[in-house]
Image (cartoon, rainbow, N blue to C red; front, top):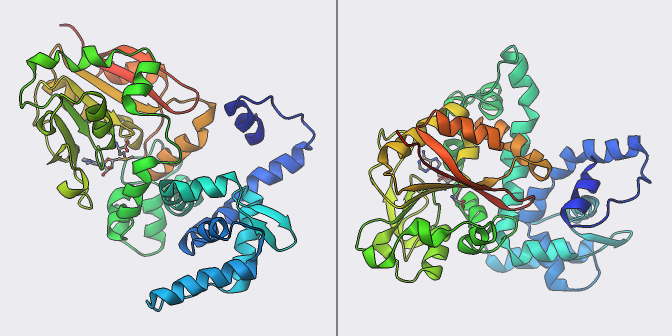
Amino acid sequence: MSFLARLAGLLGLAAPAPVIPPGAALAATITVPASLGFVPVAVHFDLFGELVRLNRHATAEEVANACNARIRACSTGDPEIAVRLASDTLYIMSGLGLVERVAEDLFAANAITRHMVDMPSAQHGAVHFTTEGMMAGAFMMKKLQATNFAYPFSEADGPIQYAYKLMGEEKLSHEHTYSIMEQQGRMDSFNQFMVGKFIKFGTFPDRVASLGYNLDKALGEPGSLDQNPVMVDIGGGRGELLLEVQAAYPHLQEANLVVQEFNTEIDAGDVPGVRLMEWNYKESPEQPIRGARIYSLQHILHNLPDLNAVALLQKLSRAMTAESRLLIIEYAKNMTYTSLHASMIALYGGRERSPAEWRQLASVSGLEVGFEGYVRAGESLVEMRLKPE
Ligand SMILES: C[S@@+](CC[C@H](N)C(=O)[O-])C[C@H]1O[C@@H](n2cnc3c(N)ncnc32)[C@H](O)[C@@H]1O
């Protein structure tokens, strides 16, 4: 199925009539990588923001002038953008559909441009996939060839690490992609991406309710609460998920909602309203919070190869009681998310997982799947609980 047909399906539109000759469709998809290389340029110079602020058809020179006036006003001595670079970048962005090309060298914001400006996390995500993601993809084949097609990759020995090895960056070539990003000052941007991602599909309590999941029951009786942790969000970033839970269940207090993170770019000031606890799920042998009602892993396991995912699930199952529930919130392994699957493999040795793969992971971790709800676009939910003895 072509990219356009999948997009039309995702939006609930009829598949477009197959008027594009197969060779042209192939070329349009396959020649995209170099165009994607211009996305960080557009974001760096805030070309999308300039087009939205100009709020009219504008030439590349007008966009570049607006951009450079802003840079000069900051007096930081940052480099300005050449008109030719602005012109090529805007032209290429219109080819990607991110801005509108109204006429030769005349551009305007479209709905995607405005979305990126209204939701800055989407621009951070665009930079992540067009820098780290692109680099990982570009070195996929070289990594496979260098290792006689050994597969799957382990978590800190994939295409990215091989790219750094070829560049003579021996130290980085042994590090996890998150650690590489941290050393390159990229984690703050990544964390901002995580706050809203590309699109928000409603709050966590609303999403799971729409899947038919009974979150009230999983959280337990309000009367029985004290200062103990009720819900623990592992790798919870800046705590958005738990803040959404707190808004829907106001009786839950800061002490009841724990974000566990190892991300040094996040400090307690970033997550007011919930408790931030440092926990490195890879290095620490045991989960320090025992018997919470809910442990959640949102977009965590798709970062991990199977062996590492099992190691984490086993740590959690050892901390769980019969009442505990493990909520795994991920995208489904379906036709909407093939590119994300590729990205997780290339960046972390991770993967999106099918219902059968979830069952396999559960069964070797002392767990069983208690509930599953999959959506075509947006976060799906897999609940695991302790397997009865
Ligand atoms: C893809 S992000 C998901 C963030 C958040 N759960 C969400 O859905 O927005 C992965 C998160 O896992 C955290 N993380 C990665 N490795 C970790 C580790 N070993 N221990 C604890 N947290 C880790 C990262 O800092 C990051 O915040």
